[in-house]
Image (cartoon, rainbow, N blue to C red):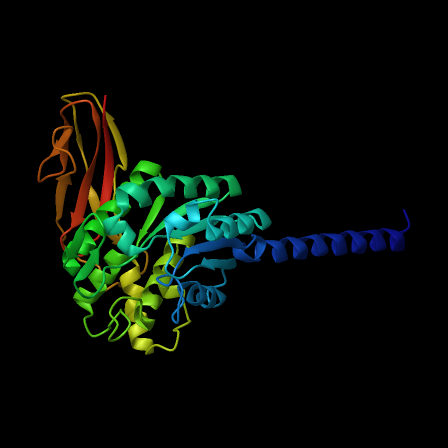
Length: 347
């Protein structure tokens, strides 16, 4: 073979190798989030989700600073809740169904009226959420339950059948237990924003979370904390990645990010036992972020059975099956107030 022709062939081969190598390097260095499709999220709620201070709007701005991708929509009807959204004959129920026909979502976040969650749980909230879950599944989305916060004053409501009056502490207890029951019975994720409000209010009392003077809806600090929690829940990442501060003092925003990063986990969310058998529940607290000064170093937990006739639980988290049926075991972190539930089925 002619020497000049041989040299040309070698040069061409080397050029091809370099070209292929460059393409390979460029491909592998592309961030993962740039290759993935945007997560499609729909918030279905009322003024507790979006009013003057909007949780979906905050979340949208937060995501712009993190490199993640999402399309965030909202269906907000002031003063309405699960009862209206679940009813296909109600105008709000019709509008929601039309919206779900037009677009597919990855997640649909449902927020109930706090007053209904407290006073009409069995008659309205519980059966209506079954319908809403079906709507989400039919759409192809994962339903998520949004637990709101207690009011910062004594809650009172009068109906034809009964007069209700609860202190803030009592209201929070009912909100959390009923939200966890919905989550366990319908096998959906619950985002317990109201419990994070309580923890933040305990360790950062100077960062007021409610709307000033009104003491019911989320203020700018409360909406920011809730948005951080939803970012962490939806993307599984630390909220300290966020560089959007929603016109808060940066120092306060950074503190709320750390509060939202504290996560409680449980070794079992559902167990099936034969009568007389036992199982141990173990809870733990961790943080997705680093150097989280709000993560309790030494924590302890309380355990409570919703029905001791079906299953009991001792102070160490050991559950014992008593008779056939289904109940919940509630586990609460003493330091943070965060709460989980385990569904127990006794065969």
